[in-house]
Length: 211
Length: 92
Image 1 (cartoon, one colour):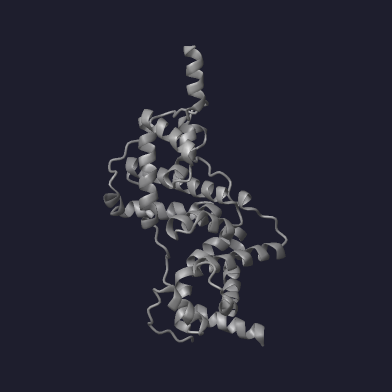
Image 2: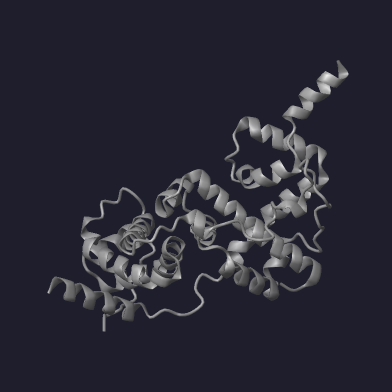
């Protein structure tokens, strides 16, 4: 079993030096840090079937090539680009023509569909009021946390990937575009759709107290 | 003349649906000056869209914090061993 120690790798330069030196602890650190997001990126490109395999292949590629990492991007962007390339290569091997657009059609009942707006673009009903608009109070709501996580898991994969890379991982739209192989403008659309879906979850929670 | 002026103004005004489409670009400061100005003008006049924009901003703020990054503990040592095994196999 690989040896794991407790070195602190908060500093990215120290972490990269550790990786290049072949330190198991440094590698475990990036596995913990990136594995979850890598799976989300792989699922966005290949769908569920090949995502686990793609991530494993990506880890092997990272392990073999870490010494060649030239630090022209952040470590995270480099790792995500590798998993994205592995996913695309896998798609080619499987000869499947799956695009993000196919994977990521408009979610039924999405905020921007006909129900919320009249034909001339006015709102068909007023924006619902919320019982609480305090972020601090909302963050304390366990049921809301459950609803948000549940909804995140049923978002179309590309929307979920774009949302997580942008709003959680704080990647730039351009970098996300490179990782997911779509334009930055399309990334903005994906992130916006995801936010609107989550907004509707909060709307419903405020109204009913449930998902 | 008055009708002409109204038509010109109407042409430059955004609808609520336009604002809903552009809301993230506005919050992320990606809308550009002209569009920003149009959105602000709409928000001045429309309390529903002001509320919507406020709610979207709160969503953007709290949703990432409510999302659990990983649902289960991962054994990174085990994953690393697996990577090493595969690397040795492919090199051998």
